[in-house]
Image 1 (cartoon, rainbow, N blue to C red):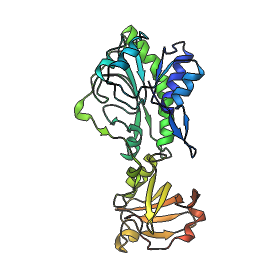
Image 2 (image 1 turned 180 degrees about the horizontal axis):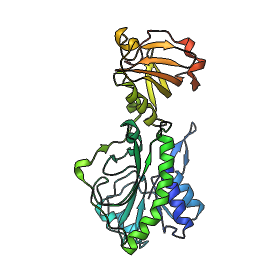
Image 3 (image 1 turned 60 degrees about the horizontal axis):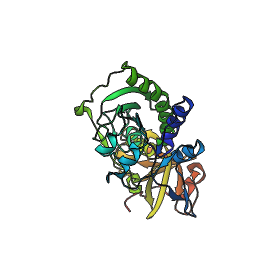
Image 4 (image 1 turned 180 degrees about the vertical axis):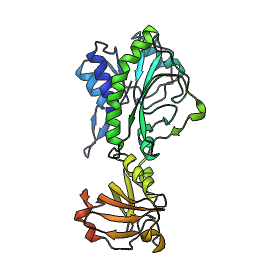
Length: 311
């Protein structure tokens, strides 16, 4: 069970190992592109390539979906970014239960956006958790975990790709450990739990009142979705790449009286902006009517003292 690219490596790994699923469950196909043509999602596309039956239910809680799944007589469910909560009657279908490939080190960052949240929170590391599913939101027992560092150059897209491959690496050992009893599920500590929510486009707006390091992490964690942005002269300005110039209040945004969100310098490399503390340099941006470009090519179009945000 899965929908986006994140789930594809695990599905392929199962197929390569001779554990081809008896069926694949994914969200309904959606229109994409300017012409809004209906196109299968990444998981559905792989399933079609391997002639695996594809189920795309619109409703999960009517009882009909559970009955349809039961006809396949599944031993085990494997889920990865399916995007919907499975009701109790569905979870009860497989003989051995259900495993979920989750993109964080549970119980930290439960919920819909763990990869984005780990970067935005400034975490030094994240990882994959293979968990036994229960009726809660990522609250089930942990079967297997592996951590990886979050690199400074990572954004949500690159980190998602790394974790997708890591999930594929772990799913076969997790299944083997479950079957032979060599891995014992471990309860999560609810006191250490944090919860993430589904991100919408409006969640990408930059808050310049935060410290420069936090804004830097926010931009990385919001790329490619929902996409970090601010406003300049009441027009949306997308921000793709930044660097921290200073993490402490300095003469630019402290003693000189610059308000957070104010352009403090336009250099040959980029556009420097005052934050709640410290200074951030914009390196790649895109205006409403323009294309993505390096700030070294457009910094001359921006004026010292121009406020950003606050639309």
